[in-house]
Image (cartoon, rainbow, N blue to C red):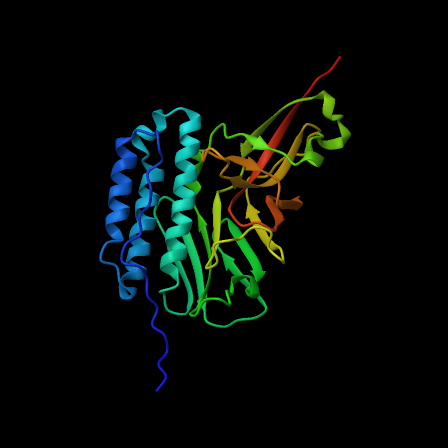
Length: 282
């Protein structure tokens, strides 16, 4: 007699603390979220997700001594928060019942996740300030039994940790708008325009996707000026684990009426930046 497989999750999942960062607020956060994973079973997956999301929401709303860290350490904390949250949600969401679930929290943090055993065509996940569309085939992982997962998280409070985060441009973007020669380009100063969102699938490797994912962000209106450009970016963890914004893997399709559309072949944490170019003049 055949039985349908029951979703299971490992009993314990550790969310690591960033090395070299000393913060009582962060240590307390990691202690609480790691305790949420103890003695975990499938029936508790939804409660555990809600508990983790609540802790993330509260941490970003009241970061405490995190705000006193130097910018580079804040960027490291942001990297560990975003990657840890993606891993935890990827790990836990496959134990949820089939369907779409949305979670909202007081400081604006949101999660939308869709679980499905089989699917085709496109799937869309909507949050208050962002939308993601992708082909369902990207979410399916033939080597594993059980349902496929697509998820989207919005963390508006992450901007507190990402101030002064560097931006690395693709080579073809090392030219300012309207044809300013690259040897006249002195500096690119990025400003975060949108909420930071993180996308995840059940599969862990989400680089060089065979079909692109489309993101649409809502953000404040931007006036068109010669030395400004709106860019779709993703968070690159970097070799040192502290990370930076990058344009590689995402293309800006257009901006209109406070909305920007991006097409990406790499899933990570994404946002819209406004780059202000300081151009040398004679």
